[in-house]
Image (cartoon, rainbow, N blue to C red; front, side, top):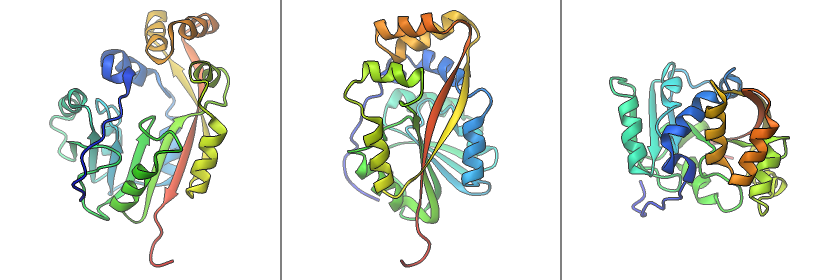
Length: 237
């Protein structure tokens, strides 16, 4: 394990509005398309899973349904506390302080490292990739799930607020790092219009959120994700 200090990269939406982000988590991918794709890509049943940037721990119980051990890693102490509260009584889950660049885990000690819309934004995230490969066992996988900014309409709203973000450059970066890429279509569905408005307001600028809200006539929208997967080689190359 490394003794390097933890570098905390803020995640403004969940750090500042965890209760609204909980609404967003419940609305995202209501049909479970991402988890179906992940299971088909890498079966974590009976294995050890790490969720980087686990936030308030929303996905930890889902992994724990079949994994032997699930470890949530989160750098923001208030979210660490929320995640620990969520998993009280779940004996195969633990939540620890750490970051993508500094996981307090032994070498070759886990089978799957999962990061969903957390830290991994392409160029510049090399230290996190190297750290994930360190803790993975041979044959294990690093899975990075992020929003597909090339897809309409959600990706268009992202690009409006992040004009410096270049989706093609991010995809080239991951390809050069040895990741496979799949695009997964999902459905987001909200309980009411105010829940939808609240989530848009923490994800986008005021202007873009208003435009997005006006664009969505009901309670659901289609959102596409990218799933990047890199496996750690087994044996010597």
